[in-house]
Amino acid sequence: MIAVFNQSWALFLGMFMLMIGNGVQGTLLGLRGDVEGFSTFALSIIMSGYFVGFLFSSKMTPLLIQRVGHVRVFAALGSMVSAVLILYPVLPDVWSWTLGRVIIGFCFCGVYITAESWLNDSADNATRGKSLSIYMIVQMAGIVAAQYIVATGDVSGYILFIVPSVLVSLAFAPILLSVRPTPAFDQAKPMTLRHLIAASPLACLGMFLLGGIFSAQFGMAAVYGTQAGFTVGQISIFISVIYVSALVAQYPIGWMSDRMDRRILIIGSTLVGGFGGLLAFAAPGDFTVVLIAAALVGGTSNPLYALLIAYANDYLEKEDMAAASGGLLFINGVGAIAGPLLVGWLMGQLGPEGFWLFLALLSFGIALYAVYRMTRRARGEMDIEQVSYAPVSATTTPVIAEIAQEVYIETEEEELLQTD
Image (cartoon, rainbow, N blue to C red; front, side, top):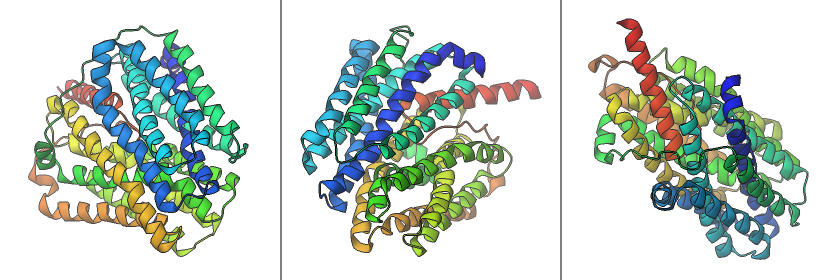
């Protein structure tokens, strides 16, 4: 692990600063929107814009890279991120912010794809899994660090908009000065949705609902905290707990995933997350209960992304796994676009506690469908060999999704060699 970090430390440092910048702007807009007098539903539209841009970028950035190269794409998109971040306080308008969020989502996804392709190029079969684990830790650490930056600043001023802009700009230096400029880039053609749904209906529906769950957490958690009357410091702690619990729970859930029927684990995880949502819904305004709920929901929903990918892979040939990642990412992205809009509407109807009811309903929906699928396809009905679980964040891009699939395939091949 240390050798892998030493080999790619500049990439990890750059990505850490990028994640801080993204984490600051995501929380800050929810807080500043309340200062500007935006309604909850208006903020939900603004937050949804990020996922619209992210989804389109996941399709278009690979084409841009193939056309003009990694360095130009990285520099162009990064410059746009820096510019939009400092324009937010200058243009306090719902539609300007929505457009800004679409651009930010598009650019951040493109920047991640470019940097992650360098990371993939620097890894080999022996280190790819470790690189993926370190990358996930860096992602979560950046988002958590961002919350403490927000807590120390003035959300009604300009400094907190300048800080992420500067961090994003500085992130280019370690990445561009330490990597080869033109790694190979060959994205797998996505599997058709019909084929993917036929292979694993549970993984597909789970990914769609999980997109809504995660985007609600990432986009609307600060809005909820503001509406619930929490201080900026409390909101920062609340959001941090979501991501810290996700990081802590990723590995025990992965360990269990490789040793039991994954559908049972999916049911158990989503029931725990749903219970957490109901707990906070039933105790409005109790900050201690909110932190417990954040740990339960964050600690189950984020690892569920990798769990659903692993479950889908159980029913796929290894040559189809990379193609499946594109389809699953698309399904998740569609759900992510709808998530903030629906939770914003529900919060408008029920108040801030609608945030928790939304998370609970979607979690229970995944659990109920998993129970139904167990009645439709018995575990012994198909002769399957479970592939190994690989930790992947719900903020994944096509590059990281395919790296994870390569880890699955390589692990499976190693296990077959050991059994021969």
